[in-house]
Length: 622
Image (cartoon, rainbow, N blue to C red; front, side, top):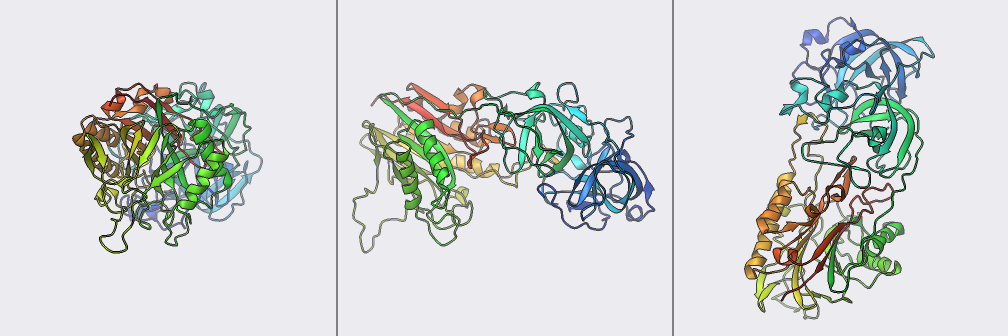
């Protein structure tokens, strides 16, 4: 069952915290001591790790509040007076328990700390009792009253304030000041949300919501979500999980009217509320956005993520991508595309060509009423660019030529390919360079890869540069898909605070390579027109994006938007700007308008999770 998978129970260990799945911090003599008669709050303690971890306990009383395939949650109907100790706990029975919701029970077993996402992960543990015996004393017992989160009830602190280090190994425990401690003090208990509103779409059996219609949450997006900021994990978000009851498909702004109750659990990087009944959905009416059309004389350049689109994808995915380009972006002149898969998709058969993927996409655009588009990219070597094995996803350019844009192919497509050496260089491994051409900066290859042999791009998509002309004016465009955040990065609600981001150095290194290339273009022509666009995988305030912008003298256009509109992705209910368009000074000085077109990230029915962006530039000058 989602969120409740576990490894077989292990014997108590006697070392200090090691990161293994079942943890015990007591001496060996304590692990084999006689069982103690204790209550749940004694087991939970005022800490992230139980003070009785590894100890045998007997006749622990509680009322069963929810049941799953390998255990149940129970809560003490006689709480203590401490707000720092939870009154709920999960009882692991291995098989389907005989106890049912409403049973008054007494449990024998051993206290353990289970880390749902693996011992080496950055996630927290769940305190539980590995049961050896469960006695049912009564049926039909009313459950303890649920605690209300939100207006009129409990509110989490606005920050995670645990300082540096591992929160499970010490430090102050203060639910009044620290959101991690706040939720830990409620672990396993019945929680009620009233009039919750979706802060993100339903995905993978989870739904991020804000209690009380979002009252007190913030800063909010213009469309009802909540913005992620540096140092603020938005702990007012509550992640609903479908482990005990199905959840409806929901978009940002949809509501769950009335009261909904569940038990608070921890799994896979977040505290999660497992509702015990399917809630009712009230649509919020969120509509997909469309930008305005470009005016005569305006060059429109956009970004679009295709999330591995390939010929085996359902026709609806091609139609949605086409609608994004035609209806949402209003058929821009050039689109920096990321995530287009090869002709065989996930089949790891050596295929790297993409002509069938491109043909289906271009045909779908035409069917949606769009103009004729052409495509340029550089075929990768098989499985050399990271991502899902066999898909060979790449970046590239979609472009139309009926409004004044031309793509400069170098070598020209009509150039003959010699039958004998010297052969045309392999574009997958040959770096593109900037050179002066007729008083302006040009490229040795177009399209060409930027430093494909640099270690920064090992196992990652290589950016490509293309030379285009807009009504006779030369422009260099760079399409990107930088190394993504992965499971190696520590979660916001994890044991290491502040969370470490071991993948960020990859993006920072990639930023330096791209910045160096842009500088080489501007060295060839100080007034060169350069556009850098695509999925940079980090917010505008991050070190990698700042490294690129400041290192190459570029302007990051999302920063020009109002904060409430500055996002292209919604991750666990946190809205953030991960996709960017940056302009060189020569282009920024022209009248321009940037827009994030919210069509994907907030909606449950979209396979992709990124919103497209577009800039319209009135290009002037020589």
